[in-house]
Length: 190
Image 1: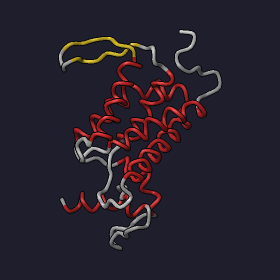
Image 2: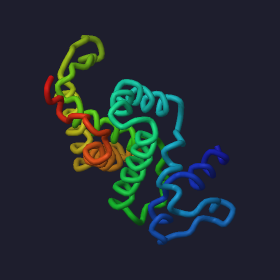
Image 3: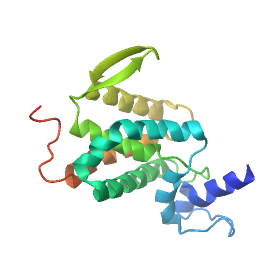
């Protein structure tokens, strides 16, 4: 719809606008360009897009929040969103297509979970039907590998593969410096 298109341009991350290559129409330029590094993560294309992100956040987010505390988790999430947006924008700085969705920030949560709890077993549905308990490291490294493969191999252009990669890398790095004192990494002592 024209209204959602306007919202995507106004609050989504448009790389060419972020890097001052292009300008938005005055009626769409409602925030400073840099604000879109966060605002884009709170818009979604449809309910399935939102639901998929929330599912991953529900499964992995609480453990990461436990390691950080509430306020630091909020800051961590916003930093992962910004890093994911920058990663996406850096790949094609001339793009005028708006980026929307929390996938990059959620990928940051996945990267952090991988650093915190690689040995914890998680349930997955193999082939969409067969429930398996596998170490988180296997599942999450396979997911990150898939993101890299799609990013380098030209996966669906409607998916911001580089935002996922950048978000996961940011989350893995940020958890090391932002975690609460005494929180161990890599399930040491398990």
